[in-house]
Amino acid sequence: MSAATAIRSLRPFLALRLALREMRGGLKGFYIFLACIALGTAAIAGVNSLSQSISATIASRGQDILAGDIRFELNNRVATPEERAFLDGLGDVSASAGLRSMVRLPDGSNQALVELKAVDSAYPLYGVLESEPARPLSDLLSKQGDVYGAVAAPLLLERLGIAPGTEVLVGNARIRINATLIRESDALSDGFGFAPRLMVSAEALATSGLVQTGSLVEHSYKIRLADPSRVASIRTEAQSRFPAAGWSIRTSTNAAPSLNANITRFSQFLTLVGLTALIVGGVGVGNAVRSYLDGKRGVIATFKCLGAPASLVATIYLAQILMIASIGIAIGLVIGALIPFVAAQFLADVLPVSTSFELYPSALGLAALFGFLTALAFAVLPLGRARRVPATALFRQQGFERSGFPAWPYLAGALICLAALAGLAVWTAYDRYISLIFLGAIAFAFIVLRAVAFLIGWLARRSPRVHSPALRLAIGNIHRPGALTPSVVLSLGLGLALLVTLALIDGNLRRELTGNMSERAPNFFFVDIQGHEIDGFRSLLGDAMPKGKIIEVPMLRGRIVALNGEDVNSRTVPPGGQWVLRGDRGITYAKNKPENSTLTEGAWWPADYSGEPLV
Image (cartoon, helix red, strand yellow):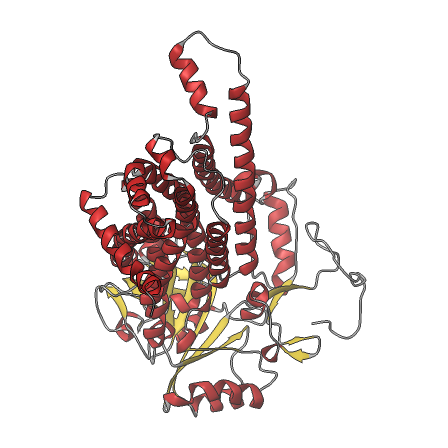
């Protein structure tokens, strides 16, 4: 090995030793650097750790959340004898029914909408139902005379202004609320509720008279399997034996798919927000590195005068930057790791999140990778400029403002880091199309803000001469060589853009939900009116509101079981359209097209249509 080769092989160790000596003076000048990296890393680590915590808890508590190993759900009908025999052969079965109805006080003084859930004596197969007072569910729902027991959510008692022990009416059934509902383990798997829960027995629901042909009722059959290892094969067997059943099948490994999907989407949104904060901080990283290197002009000059090659100088300060970035990332990871534990103290009552402290290595690793890529992407260019400055220029106290663009390897390195940052954001995204739009918007914002910074400098350079020395110096500092105008405009512009974007999203959602409510929303909305009741209902409305406008839409509920003649379970559906197939849909058979509907293809059936049923 030649002497030159030996010296080159020792350069990394020499650079590391010199970098460590340089850092003996502390982190002065790098506090902004540390804050930018730590905050951005903490945001990404915390959001993804919380998302994984919720997903892991759902997976580990799948049986409790589903209240079974597997669930079969049918809309508007009970299982046929053949279907029920098949389900009974799988293990212990708990049947329940859910629908929306009105509960009213016997004297008619008050009423409220409820999510009615009727359960059998086997409920729940897994998990627990907590109530106040704490008594067996069978006792709370038992019948005393002609009055059935019930458990109600506290919100329902508050809306009706009553206390436990009060009797109410549900359809034709008289119900006594014996306890308030504290926790219902399978509430998450039942989906979003529009009203507070009222839980009754299956016998009480049958007595109420609410379940008739055409009633909107979801019948669920939750099963504790005799052989839990058969979960995967049972779905296939059920679909092959009963292809026209139209039931929705869910297993404990995917107990709350809608919640999982919403958490994933929300975490992607917050991850992109965190990435924006990290990129905004990246501009601060570039400024901090540049200012630090500008303050090290004498040291760099000394290195070069003693014969240190430019590559060694760049390696020394690159090692320092990586060490300082590591400190900032470590701080961010510690904060991010604590976020799920802290959030659990506030979310445990509404979301399945673990209250014990756990680490999520993949989330922390992803955040660390984002942090390192950001630090490198914005620090490489100042290093490249410092590398090109000759020692003579440094001794004359000239900074880096006239050093121009760095050498092409540094430009290429910065571009590679930015490309890796963008690729990582797209690759880890739930919706890659949104990620691409987001990254394109950031790139466009960079271009626009750089153009704005150039325009500000151009205007300052051509502004009339002012008499005030302070103002003249201020204007001169805006356009002088090496001015921080581009960096300041970029940082403020991106930060403001992020805040404005969040405000616009919030404002658009609020306006969409409430902006035209008074103009378009009806005063009353009635559902589940049976065919034999419609004439009397029209007469009642006509007497109460002679000049009122009544819009009727006949409707039934159903699931899509085939798409273009193929079983939907055998087709690959994009994530954006899977929600259509997950639950039941509203289907109208109105004679005329509803006023607020748009027909995108085909023709509406004739008002006097008579023939084969279309649904």
